[in-house]
Image (cartoon, rainbow, N blue to C red; front, side, top):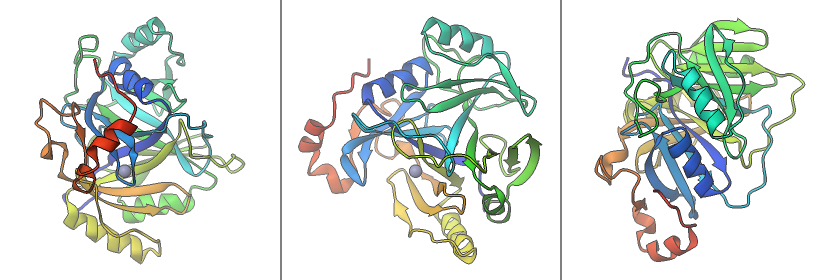
Length: 313
Ligand code: ZN
């Protein structure tokens, strides 16, 4: 199993206001901010990582908050929905909680035999809370308001919207080891048996859909999980052999990465489990300090001045 794609590693999206983003994900949804750092390609911008207690791959949603960014358009060629796994029987809790906080959501609906509600974050990013059909043994981060029996456990799935699914499906099946497991209308479900959680990719086929525009409230890329950077480089060969252009290995401090654009237009990343988020902070202190990669440490004072203040309590 160790040489396979192990479902999702993280999903990265674009937000507007950093404080609103923090308040929504940490307070409303009860995720843990496991790392507060900067965009390594643009150190004047935060990069937030939300996840479970230790930031387990498959639980990590990351954001670049750009103050004042215009709203993007959710459309084809991008990931359009993020599915979070919540315990069976917890959707009534979430409905009540979102109602009390004045956050709009759909009624409890059903897709592929699983109940879910759909909501938007403060920038319009679409999230589904899915009461997974099979037991999800992952241990969630808990808060005063959100106890273990209702807390978000990590990703359930990601949804891609594509004009044509064929070439993307081929990447999922032939390179990543996924199989199509179901279809409902124009929605195809793919899953891998290499891991039990965060192992689903849904594709919505929208031949006449408008192209997505990547800005506020849209997903930037979807990262798939591999055991380590050796397996990562094995997959690099497979992607190259399929005739796709892929980056060299990039050190993201908390994982190693490769990026390639799949034929349907979605930016895919492959990311390693190693070294993880406890490399530069203790487990207790995760997310409480502004962590900078070595190349920016000398600029810390200036970077701290430029970044908007973030109240974490
Ligand atoms: Zn990424």
